[in-house]
Length: 256
Image 1 (cartoon, rainbow, N blue to C red):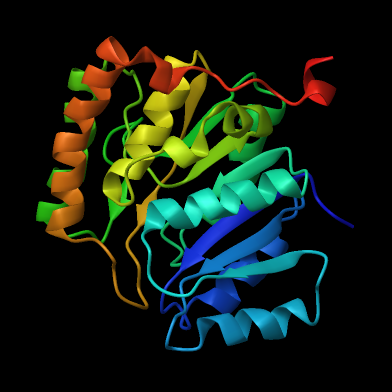
Image 2: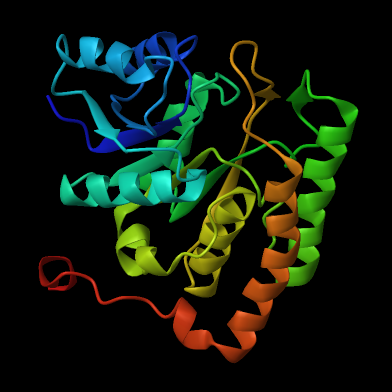
C-alpha cells in the first residue's frame, strides 16, 4: 500500500550503504515511509542495487536516474517534483550514509502531520552539539555556519544547514522550485529561508548526527563558500526582491 510519506535519498556512489538504508527506512515501525532514490549515474552500480530492490517492492521503492552528477540541490528538486506528481503529503530529505538517524523519521513526520509544523528539521545543534565522529574542523565550520546564517537572515533555526528535513506538501507547492538558485551546501539554507519568508512554521527535532562509516563524503570547500556568499544574497533578496519569496497559488482542488 502506498504511504502518504516519501523519503528522498540522493545518491552518487553509495553502493556500500544503499541496500541497508532503504531496508532501514522500509522497516520503521511507527509510520510507513516509501523511498525515492535520485541517482546521478553512479559508476559504482548504486542504481542497479536499487532496481533489484524495486523488483521485490515496486509500490514502496522508486528511482529517478539522472545522466550525471548535477548537484545535491537539483537532485532534491527533481525528487520534490516527483513526490508532488505522485501525491505524497510529507516529503523528507535524507542522506544515504546513515548519518541521519532512521528512528527519527516518525518524529519528523509527526511534527508536520500532527504537531503544527510546516517544515521540521532534524537538528544537530538544538540541544548543544550532537555530532559523532566528525573532524573538529568540519564540526566547527558547520556549527558557526549555522550561527552565521541566523545572524544574517534572522531565522531562529539553529541548524540551518541541516539536510534531514520534512516538508508538508503545501510548502513545496508554494515554492517556485525552478527558482531555487543554489546546488550545494547553500541549497539547504535557501529552502529553509524561502519557507521562513513565506510564513511557514519551521520547528526543530533534536537528533544525533553520526559521520558516515562507509563511502566518501561529498563536502568540499567550494560548497562551503557558496553558502557563505549565498546567505548574504538571500538576505538582500528578501529586502529588495520580495517577489522571489512570494507563494505560488495552490492547485484549485487544495484551495477550495
